[in-house]
Image 1 (cartoon, rainbow, N blue to C red):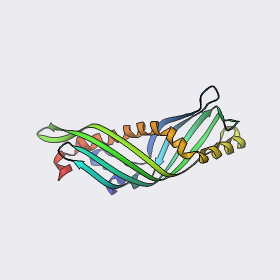
Image 2: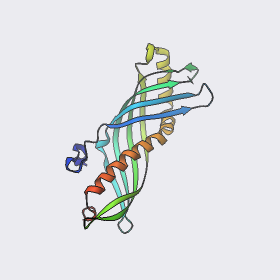
Image 3: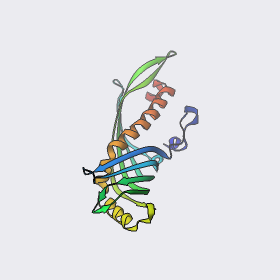
Image 4: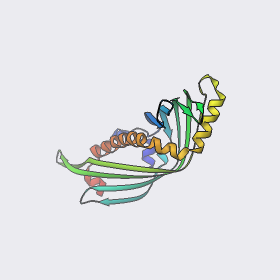
Length: 199
């Protein structure tokens, strides 16, 4: 994993941080006053400290499952929101921050061998992932128009409902992270012959 922290330029793999996600959204409640928030330009740090804690593999069927642990991820983003939250009109925007600790992640990979110029490589066929977070602290600041009441209401709600908010974010997060991971694994498989994986 030390190589991953520095990147591997010869394989076209740059440093993994920050992880950049363009946009995710959440929606709480229905109707015209339902709360909706969009987070943009998300930058996350801490992924390079990933430790692989378990590996399961079936060489014959080219299936692999990795269990990983990340001590802490710090995220920053800009957000915009609309609707009503705990009786406060929550339309506006500002800066979002999040500290996520104790992240456990499982990644399943199924590949197939392909022959390229007489050498055998793997080609990604399927990937699945899931993750959990033990502890979450997050909030907003620099709320537009300096609305201290709105900022206090948002931070109270966010920290009282952090796991529920993560649950709302999770589908978008998983989809975006899967895109990044697919690109990463595709790059590895295209550059590293199959026999190097099983040596």
